[in-house]
Image 1 (cartoon, each protein chain N blue to C red):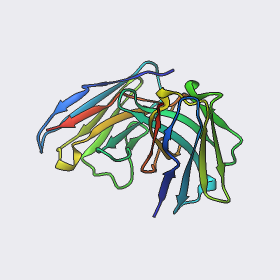
Image 2 (cartoon, chains in turn brown, purple):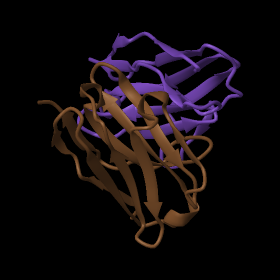
Image 3 (cartoon, rainbow over the protein chains, first blue to last red):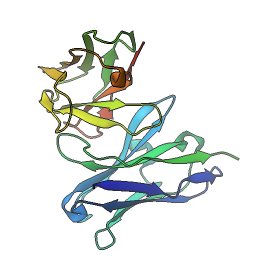
Length: 117
Length: 106
């Protein structure tokens, strides 16, 4: 069974840091582009970042550039999102998902991040 | 950035109804448009990709059409499990963007 399981969410103060993880099983992780997508009630679904199979190509939405870092460990079948200098507007449910050129085929269940003092 | 708009934003329907949702892009996206269904408390689920290709395992009552900048998702006969929010997404240009969603409710 294909499974993506996010972890690492929680409450963090503005300016703080958090590292999200996504553990993958049931498919060949190293063959897939991966993405992080977040969802808030106010802004809906927002693509955050993507990384290619070997980590050589990385893309970010403008609002997180310089603050968030996407990475992967193919040996551990894991995807990560390091979030620094966090802001209230980063509060969201964060999903990891596989990325094909035609769509995001498999999604995790999401992990909730709250940025608040 | 490519902006996506959806209409309607809310749709009230009954089981058995034919439902159509429209997604418009601010520029051409080479038909690299996907549709997702999201039930409350769950992750989005890919339904349609490349504007009209049904994802494996998705019931045939779902269909997609369109080209250029205007696309539609049609549910031919609404079932109880189809009451959810539907999003379009373009993957032609980064940043990848999503529409604001259409909630289908009773």
